[in-house]
Image 1 (cartoon, one colour):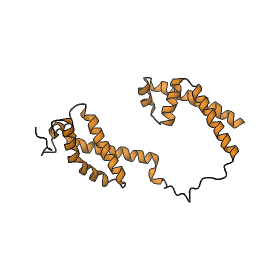
Image 2 (cartoon, one colour):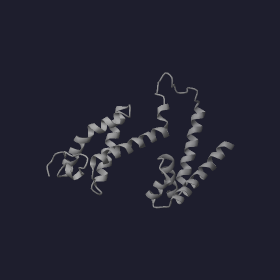
Image 3 (cartoon, helix red, strand yellow):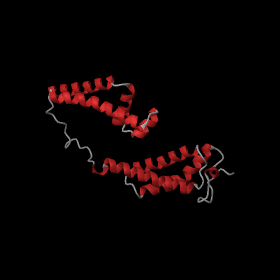
Image 4 (cartoon, helix red, strand yellow):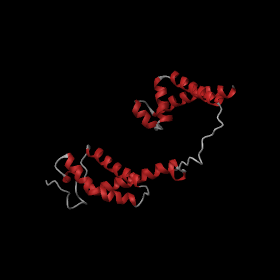
Length: 189
């Protein structure tokens, strides 16, 4: 087997791109980096995003290569690229990224009317929330952190922690109930 890129790209398997791992990935990168960049550049305005999406495809390929052999590499590469682009668009839509404004120091001046009393009240509220979180059972606190702060899905949390999705949801509900009690007490004061 030669250490060069196969001539017939349509039916080439990953094994045909080189003898060893490093050689194979160097040849795959040489063959597909420019076409992938072109594919993404036609669909994405930001050059940094184009590069990130290209890297995402290669990362997916490397992860996949540790499993079953990849046949028809070119078809697989561009299917992965199409999926990466679709996921990227979905993430942008969810975040409504196109509606975001750039930061302008003159327009976005920080509020100067924040009194020391308001700062103190804010710190006290944060301390109360921290106290509630520290008082939660470890598993409940972990579920809360993964869901609320890291924005993980319940199924992902359940898999990570070795519990059912329903159990993860119950832990989150328990954490929110405890925080709700503290917030309700704050509102009454």
